Image (cartoon, rainbow, N blue to C red; front, side):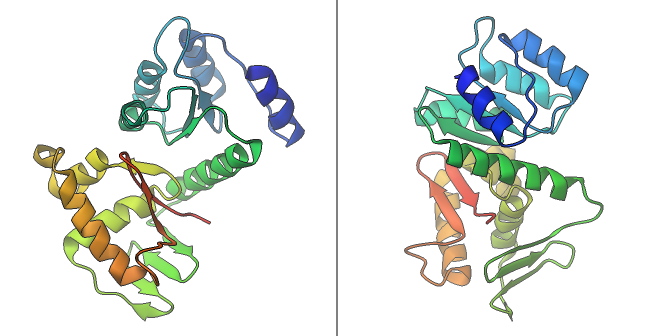
Length: 215
């Protein structure tokens, strides 16, 4: 896998720093401050989820998990620990490159001063004005609908878990009430999607959460 990534990513202009263990990865991340981190969960010295937790103690560098573990609970655990995205092996290089581009764009937006204005297709969200428009027309959202959409905008292109959305909109005591999210996401889709049954913007990651398309 490392050999495949080395050849493919260097061929697309990326410079790689490779590590065999989680402890070495933590050291190299602190030393080199990379633009993005590709992380396998099956490491010889510690679980990749623990590596993610330790990284999140001091850095917001995008973390994309590449793992053979395809179960929903593995994805949820990695994302809740702070990973930005999750790709299950085997995957295509085109998809990985797209995920890396999204992660790097999100990093740039988060690093800018002030609240960003998010735009994709006909959807425009101005977080500083708390204003949402579709096709130039203002869309009226309830406070909860807006909070959920704002959370997805701030993490555009990333999978946001049910637990993360519940904590943002309803607080830490409601993190098991996943039906709340489904109800409000359905309402959001009816307000911002042309065809709510086939959403263009608010994408469901089955059993895990939601992703707001960034491109």
